[in-house]
Length: 363
Image (tube, rainbow, N blue to C red; front, side, top):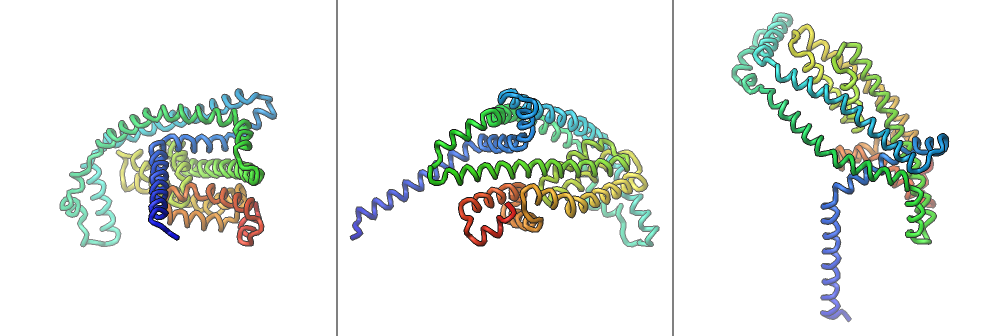
């Protein structure tokens, strides 16, 4: 018989559960920065695994020395990035601060007049449109310098984050065998083997995925660099690298990179003739980037991604598309790693399920 006491106890238990869940979620929200540091450190550990194994097996490094050498290697890479990007930021800020908006307006008008005379179009008066809209009076690029200063301040604040990430990564690399042995003691005996096998497979596949991703970005970077060098773009190395990094975001990243390359190309040529130099070269760069993206989307990306995680290219495309629609850009970035983890776990715990067996037959 259900009494009022039983009902009240059930309500109290439900309220207590809700409060506990809310407290846990609030706690996780408060330490979200630490969680981000842990995730970044895990990714770095996965990427570093081949190097760590090489140092341990081939060069006979100890755990501490191998971890320290790997962290030093990461620091060198980040230092190289800084020395690459700071000159680009400073040069583009200087270009924008020297921009003569009146001259820019005159170049637009000259271009419009050339178009009119070539196509015999007389009903469009760009000069009047510009004056009526007052666009040129609102063009003020001095804010760009202030924006750069705020970015530099943000980068300075990131120093503590980098130190924290490298500190955590060092111990992840150094004591990963210890962590595995301790995890075995904590895990329930009934599922210990399945969980350990899942972790091992996930570690292997994600290491291959991130290495494959680095390979893909390297290919794109080289192709972008060739395009920019052919057309004599200033800061070609840095622009190519920045646009290649944006390729981490599937499908949308390359579009952003192409637009960014076009903008940086135009900014770097401020002071030149718009019609005969800036516009043609910008169009050529954009066309070159579109060709690179066609090569990447149809050849390098499907092959590298599918081979690294043992999935069909169509499977990769669909999971990225669904994740992008559901969770946005973040979902597109993490789609393949998360999907790979789920496939490994499903195969380990539900190997007899027909759907699971079809999805995971290549793992």
